[in-house]
Amino acid sequence: MELLIFVEKKNYKKVEELLKKDDIVSGASIKIRDASDFGKEGFYFLLEGTEEKINKAKELSKNLAMEVVGKEKEGVVAKIKEEEEKAIEGFGFLGI
Image 1 (cartoon, one colour):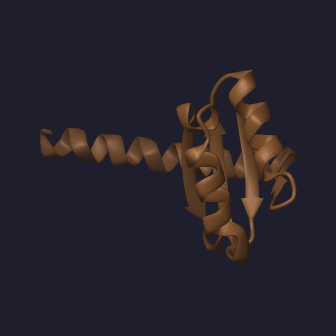
Image 2: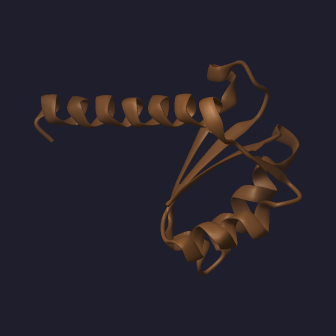
């Protein structure tokens, strides 16, 4: 499962700490991107993991973040995955 949430700058550190320090959620893949690339002030958190991890992340961030769905989610997730693929290709090119 995957979850995309948007976090305002003022809540960034708090949400990051809550998610990364939680025993359940910290086992999920957590990717953080500056939302300015998408014309917004804040950060996107993309979490990938089991249903339990995603549900716990929703619970922890519910008053500090907003779940992103629909076309916006599709666009942001596609961009993040594209960036990752380019980074992996770059490492391959370097022979690492």
